[in-house]
Length: 313
Image 1 (cartoon, one colour):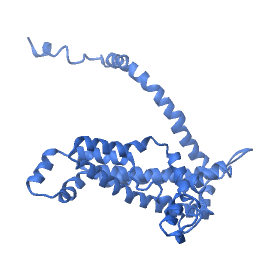
Image 2 (tube, rainbow, N blue to C red):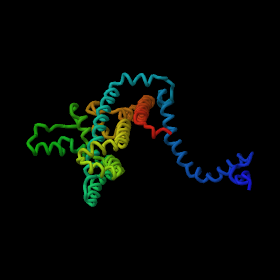
Image 3 (cartoon, one colour):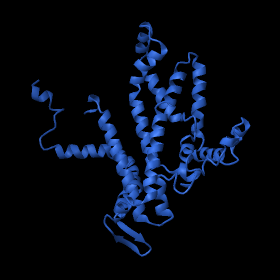
Image 4 (cartoon, rainbow, N blue to C red):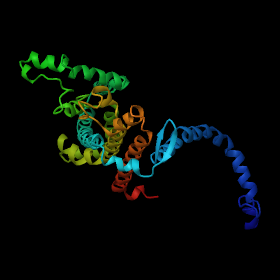
């Protein structure tokens, strides 16, 4: 048999490229049709509003219609005292929560990972995962009661003889941001805990056994082996934390409504009020665009700084 005849059934015939493409299209058409509704929903409910909001940021919108104002809405950002204060508050909350997410959930995950009894380890995981099912709003409302004048924190302080420290925690400009930051103490969120725990489980048992043979203590093993191998999980959680606080505003809205005054205002809440209370759609869209650009820059910078050779295709 000649070599040409041996490969005649594999190599495409000349001029058959068009027919092969149609055959592939017919073969994958059901898959494309299954994906089509998701693509349409993304275009309608995500990409279109984002593009529309970006264009609206260059307009002044009222009941009479939209009027093009160029960069006027963006110039107003630099003169908005409430917005400037909200970015200060955002930096405080973001830095505080980045420190939290890289310490306490990691510590709890490492401690539970070291429990020798697998049944006990399982139930400890359940204890920290169950709070995930509690709605965030319900948890915030509980903490709002804790910080109220007759709430749990003041009751506790009075019971232990520290009644002089009681105050309206959410009505005091000097402590309101710390009160928001300490909400959900001890901050061991179930998702963060599970991500660290999964990273610990992914570490090769041979590496851990070798460290034991070399005489490494549990603390030494954590700092020299486990912590360096958990850097991808830490980077992921830092990025998710920054993105969350950039776009989130439900905590200050429910707890303080941005007050007292605007001492606990955050950019997301300022945007929400500009659109829904002041009916200033153009200015609110400008704030949203700036927040989007900040999140985009943080994401790209994070990916750039953490990229390795394995990430390059």
